[in-house]
Amino acid sequence: MTKLAGKIAVVIGGNSGIGFETAKELKDNGATVVISGRNKERVKQASNELGVLGIVADVSKVTDIENLASEVHKKLGKVDILFVNAGIFQPAPIGNITEEMFDYQMDINFKGAFFTTEKFLPFLNDGASIINLSSINAYTGMPNTAVYAASKAALNSYTKTAATELAPRKIRVNSVNPGPVSTPIFGKTGMEENQLTNFAAAMQERIPLKRFGTTQDIAKLVTFLASDDASFITGSEYNIDGGIIINPLLG
Ligand code: NAD
Image (cartoon, rainbow, N blue to C red; front, side):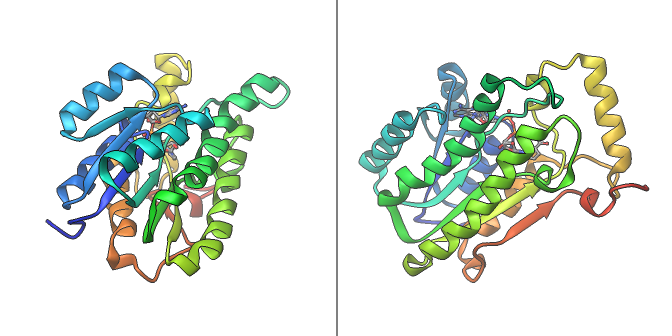
């Protein structure tokens, strides 16, 4: 398929999970893709596997984002698709959250996302598409997600402001809010294997469509929003969650 032919796409956090699958989908649709990530070995392995350029950049460091943006520009020119996907999920109960835990999650999920657009802006083509990977957690009040949920709610708010401010350049900005998706993110929480299995089973039972999302589900929506098929869509949020957000109490 060639609906993204001639477009330059950057996937922030493209070495794993949703970012990796989306990089593949964007490439399959004809885009020239760059992935970034924080771990050198994993970025190298994923970029080799995908056959795309990989650049190491930690989004919690604004200078890393600045260097990433200028390196992409130097190597490939201006960018048409910016998928702001990097994120971490670190659940913890209110009352046990340290300043360090707060900063760690906010610095990646919100500040990192915020400064990604800020630093790429001079290198975006007019008419570019920015897609912020948020979460339905921004709306669900799920226990142990106080910082994570707030980081994603802040991102969704930012999507709307950015959409209005960047509209004169025809740059579109949208958010995607997945429900639970099977990716390595849960294994990085520090939860034990059996806790993870119980969590997944309980969660799946609550989802009207009775399954977790796949990375392909999300990649296809992001690719649509990145394409000219979505040229009249900006400032919007897309829930992609098997219906869990409309099923808060009774399944
Ligand atoms: P993942 O752990 O497989 O991938 C996370 C990606 O983010 C990796 O590529 C990693 O390199 C990158 N990353 C993390 N910290 C970084 C940093 N400091 N600098 C640069 N890159 C960094 O997880 P995933 O599930 O694919 O998560 C992708 C996004 O989807 C996240 O923003 C997450 O919050 C969001 N999300 C995931 C789910 C889910 O159920 N998996 C649901 C809703 C939202």
